[in-house]
Image (tube, rainbow, N blue to C red; front, side, top):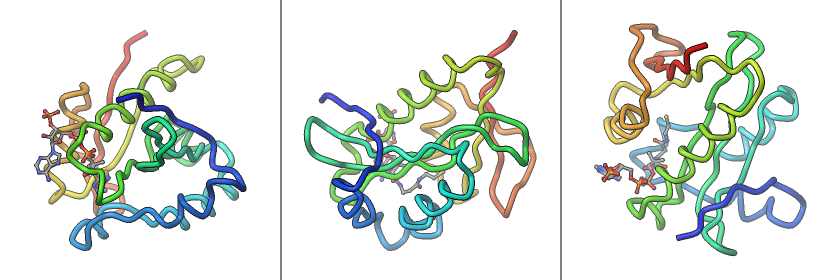
Length: 147
Ligand SMILES: CC(C)(COP(=O)(O)OP(=O)(O)OC[C@H]1O[C@@H](n2cnc3c(N)ncnc32)[C@H](O)[C@@H]1OP(=O)(O)O)[C@@H](O)C(=O)NCCC(=O)NCCS
C-alpha cells in the first residue's frame, strides 16, 4: 500500500465528489462537495484526495481553524468500497505528520460523532484524547504536541 495525499484539481475533482461512505455513515461526515466548497471560503483548510498508487480511495481536509484558533483535521473519509483496508489510518497518520511540521502547531483538534466508535478508536490510537467539549453535537478530541 502506497498512500499519498494529492491536491484536488480539475482532473480529479469529479472522482473526488463521487466518493461516498456507507448510508449509515452519512451523518458522520459532510459530503466532499460541501467540503471542497467550504475550503473556498475558508482557505486555511486544505482539501486533499487520498490515493493508493493511482487510485483515489478517500478524502481528507485539514489545516487551521480560524474560528477556534487551532490546527485541525476537519474531514476524513474513505470510500465505502475501500474501507477496512488501512487507508483511513494511513491517511490520518500522514495528515498528523504534515500538521506537526507546521510552525506553531502545538495541538490538533477534531470532532467526532459520539456514535462513531470506529473513528474514535482510530484517533485514540494515534494519541488523540477526548476533552469533554462538544461542538455542533460532536465530541472534540485533541492531540497535544507539547512545546
Ligand atoms: C472512519 C474511517 C475514515 C476509517 O477508515 P478505514 O480505511 O475504513 O479504516 P482503517 O482500515 O484504516 O482501520 C482503522 C481502524 O478502524 C478499525 N475499523 C475499520 N473499519 C471498521 C468497522 N467497520 N468496524 C469496526 N472497526 C473498524 C480497523 O480495525 C482499524 O483498527 P486497527 O488499525 O487497530 O486494526 C472510515 O470508516 C470512514 O470513512 N467512515 C465514514 C466517515 C467517517 O466516519 N469519518 C470520520 C469522521 S470524524
